[in-house]
Structure formats: structure tokens, C-alpha cells
Amino acid sequence: MAAEVNFTWDYTGFFAEFARRGTPMSSRAKNLLLTDSNRAAVRFWHRQFIKKHFEHSAATRYRYQARKEPYKAIKEGLAQGKTYTINGVTVDDTVIKGGTVSLVRSGATERSAIKPVPIFATPGKAVARVIVPRYVSVRRKSGRPNQARELQTVTTAEKQQLNSVWAKNFYRGVRILGSAAFRIRRKQP
Image (cartoon, one colour):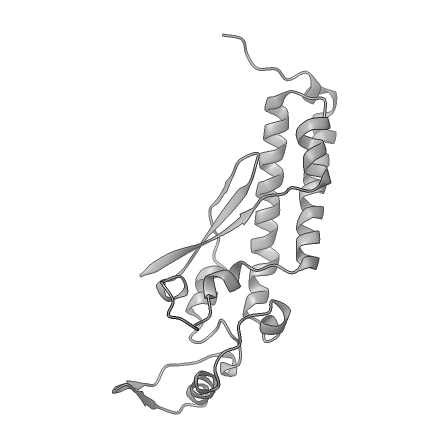
């Protein structure tokens, strides 16, 4: 079974306020540019940053909740080909990346997360719907890591890059439209 993890981008910086209030162009043109800029930022997140969640340095970069020692030992043992019996169930899963990457065990989450995703955008925000295995977003037991939240996390530097992509896309659109953007008006009924 599959589940969704939604990454939502809502740009609220200086450029967004200027774009929403200070740009003298029609509402239609402004909304088109805002929607396109939000979509570009989320597309950039998915293409550039989602892969970083499946690297060895991800746990420290994104400050994931620490995994418990018994879990880490079993995961690393499975990566070496050992078999375990847990609660009467024999576990002999294939574990990739040496069993040392927090969000990776069999690789199912990574494979599904890096596939192309639908992006839904409005002038106010954009959402990427990342389809992942159900165990990523099911109700968690107390003390277990919230893998869905971990997958959505961005660092301050990444947030700045997203802001930069948003702003570049918006102002590129303004330049392309040029003076035509100021002449676009809604059709009168």
C-alpha cells in the first residue's frame, strides 16, 4: 500500500509581499507569475533536495530523531546477510547502503520518493505529492521517528536556495511579460 507525503511551499518573504502588493500589473498576470514561481520552487526542491535525504549525512544535516541502538544493530546485521527472529517472525530483509542511512532499509522509500511527482500550485502556495510506502506515514507508536516529517525537512541554506529560485522565476516572468503584463486585464462580461 502507498501513502502521500506532501511538501508544501508557501513563500512569504519580502519578494512575495512586493509581488503581491507592489507590482503594478493586472491581478491575472500577477497570479500567473506567483503560481509559476511557487511551482518552480517545489520542482527545484524535488529535483535537488529529496535525494539528499537518502545519503549517509542526512541524519545530521536534517537533525533526524536518533534511531535506537537495537534497531541500528539489526539493520546493520541484515545488511551483512544475518537473519533475525523478532517476535516469532524471521526477518532476512535485503538492506542497502550498509544499513547506516536513517530513511533507507530496502530502498523502497527512496525509489518511490525520487519518481516524478504531481505539483499543485496556486498563487499562495505549491504542494508536491510524494508517494511513499505506507509505513512512512502511518500512525506512529510513541517514540518512533516521524519519517514523513523527516522527509519534508529543509535546512536554512536549502530554504534560501528555494527563495532564490522563487524570486528569479518571478522576476524572469516579469521581464518576459514586460510592459504587456501591465496591460493584461480581465475580460468584462
